[in-house]
Length: 479
Image (cartoon, rainbow, N blue to C red; front, side, top):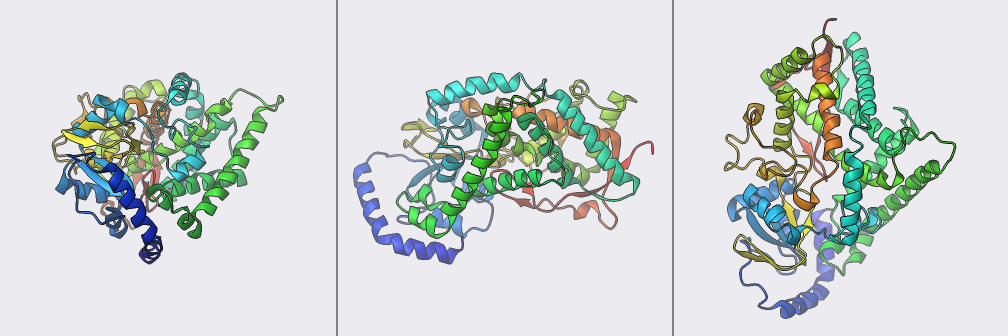
């Protein structure tokens, strides 16, 4: 949305907003005496103008503000009170000490529509329905990590063969595209019981729906911040775009349901249809991780060599790294964790919402406050990490710090009641894929490129993708 359009719509709505704000102020006068530190704000829009006029990504914008106003910062985006958490200490307060107060989800327009009225595990508010669904999903997903091991190993073997064909002809490979396909094949086989053709129409449709849904979920929606401005979203075309995508998902999932009801269809690789939407949301978030890991390794050749030596010494001449072998790859696991620190799956964790008025860090936080935990900022916190800007997997060797939600210095999957229960399945895919690519191939920059030319520009959304495709030259060892 352009600044000119935003200003025009704001001016049109100004009289009505003034009336609503006055009524809101009168009804809440004197309710809170000590809010967390906050920058100066404007009437009606609060701090929204600061976000709109800043060209940096939201997590970077909030990180810069936190450097001035502290790790617990209060903002107001339109009529939404917002709390931003930017330190491990405050994250522990939110996601552990006061987790029950902070564990709900906000009612946001796009999330509500695309998750069937917030009926999935990611976007559902905290209630009895969510608690029962989480119990089922945790047991269901954890029990299937090993069940689908053969799918992961088969897709890794196919990926190796694909890259090998490029290496024979000494052709550079679009590593980003290869990994996106690899991840999609696993998701489809686990979630749908089918493997789409790499260049097929169904695969393109699947990718397009995922890409469009993530774009919509990270788009600005007037209704989320100004409850009576749904007309603005309609004028901007946002609601029409949301409705079209929602109907396309309806059709897509109905076709899957029909296939699952087909008594003649083989069941060996099918997942229960209840889990399909959840698997899509959780598994796709980790797709960029392998690309970021290889980017960091190519930028740091000593780390690359160390990871290759580890896996080749451990596996020897077996010819393939299986998931049992992966458990012994201590350095590779440290590389992945260090990548999670510097490039978390979601720089801003999915927003939470306070269930009631509460106190944290000596400050009062209103009920229904939107809460953002800046995982990107926490990964660069000097109090938690020495030389935080440096890529140094060695810092995690022998360290008890892990990504599973118990160490708040590293929370790429969140923590507490809202920790991602599907992380084990996703990480298993990342570890197995990387281990075999490092075992089977030597990696170089393509002709004409130096490691110094490798960029880390990102496209921001619900997850952070590498802006420019990672192009690499693979050479199969022992060729």
